[in-house]
Image (tube, rainbow, N blue to C red; front, side):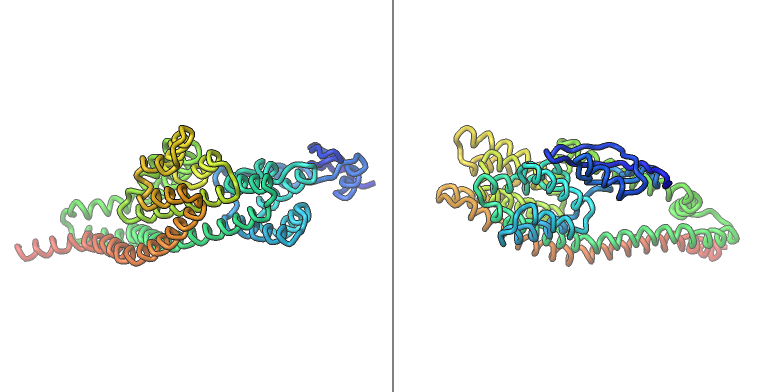
Length: 410
């Protein structure tokens, strides 16, 4: 008689109620058959005691979905619904085709909820760490207005444009990141392998080392703990930064203010924020999301806490009967061109079209700024790397000049 195993399961019954528990059976097929006999359809079935009976997650490093995967999902979803395919059939196909495991699981849960009678937007809202609030708000508006296929189409366009913009930013940042990484590796290599050779040579020649050279020698001796300390501080600082940006609005506000004031990168960050603000607000208003709710969603999805704070002030102005443009003028982050275009849109009744034009303008500005940044930062990084390497070489050869002068004086 085969040995009985214990399986942990999650299931859904005919009424759409979900359940979890354990079931004993000889194998997975038998466990599935047993659950079906109870009137439950298994969604997940895992044998306990096999490997680690738990899912290990490192905060900030797991369960994330790439923007590119979301853009592909939205485009495929929009195409399927536009062709007349049902939501359940579309979600079933998308669940099978999606490569991202977190996204696949979320799509499966959404499909199950929709099959149980839930709305698409409410089902996606349960997975707000996977699906952006902008997507959920637009789908909810599309459901209300009976144009969910149009909402999905615009979501796909927005995510694809955002993916392109992020790709350009990453491309602009890749070169300095590589140069800085190589510089740190070079410094470590010099301290570990080169400095000890010169130290032995200086010891044989005698004499007192200059302070800067002695500093390099001391750093070489202490690399066994300085290196791990730097790595630990870097990793710890990164985790702390990510945690603070997720949990503290005040911290995000300070960081974003520093970002837009940075000499080289500041203009790029500001143009990127304006592009996202205009694009997101235009999309929400275009599908019929109420202005007050649209301002809330835009503030939380632009990725800039300065704009989020500004949106709260604009909401208060709109609530008092003032136009949106008047509230934006009180915040310097919004250029005059943006407020003027929005004012024209309010007066002409074409605010979503004006916001689209503003977004297109800033998309081009971000492209130009990214190209300019790449061109201007290359000589800066070369200068930094040359200064570091040249400075270390001078520090190592400086005692030789001192010894030579002493020999001449004697």
